[in-house]
Structures are given as structure tokens and as C-alpha cells.
Image (tube, rainbow, N blue to C red; front, side, top):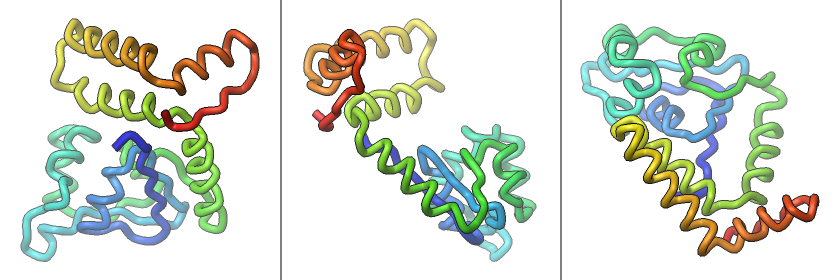
Length: 166
């Protein structure tokens, strides 16, 4: 998916809700939100992709601890572990998440998609291969994306770009 996936957590993200929350490209949380894996607490194994995502975010040992012991993390702890991107006061969470969503919606969606793909692949590629993928991605955008042409043109002309998602 080219578009960034924004998650806003205002309450408790547990089990499948936890899995969905950590799958976001940007994860915003209210200061009162709580996070817990919760699966083994009820005698089942994790699902929803959390066994793939969580170790990539916090490392294998910490993921094991979170999945076996099921601590309930406060928003600050989740931020320190890299599970979430930002914390907002509860009353401001949705407004702030929508501000970012509108900002991203006006952005270069194809460039966002390439960025997401490059980051997703980076953990399994050598530096040399990653540089090759970056070169192909940027060259492809420069050749085919109207948004890239608009972005470069606006930079040269010293004006704000007007992206259309093309």
C-alpha cells in the first residue's frame, strides 16, 4: 500500500488490537493508552502478524518477554520501546492524527510507497543491494511519477509542490 497507514490508539490495544496498532507506519497514542500482547495470557499463541512485526521493532529478546509475560505498557513505555511514534493528550489525539493524515494525503503517494518498500526490505538486504534498490526506486520515480516532476520543479522554482498522487 503506497499510502501511509496511521493508527491512533485511545484506550487499550491488546491482542489483535495490539497487532494492528504496531503494524501502523505511524502510531499515535493518547497519554492514557495502554498496550499489551495478551495472547498467552488467555492460552493462545499470537496472531495478526505480531510475531513478525514485534521482533523487528523491539528485538527478539524483548519481543519474547512481551509475548510471554504480557506486561501492560503505558504510552511512555511504548514510546521508549519504539512501538508508537508520538503521544498526545487524550483530548487532542484524533485532531492531531487527522492533521498528519491530511498532510500525508496531500503528499507524493508513490514516493511514500517506495519509501515504505525500501524500509521493509532493508533488514534483509546487504548495503550494496539496498543502494541498488534505492537507485532503481528514485530513477523510476524520476522517470514515471508526475509528483516527482512536480516536486523537483517546485524546488527549482522555490514554491510549494502540489502533488496529485501520480
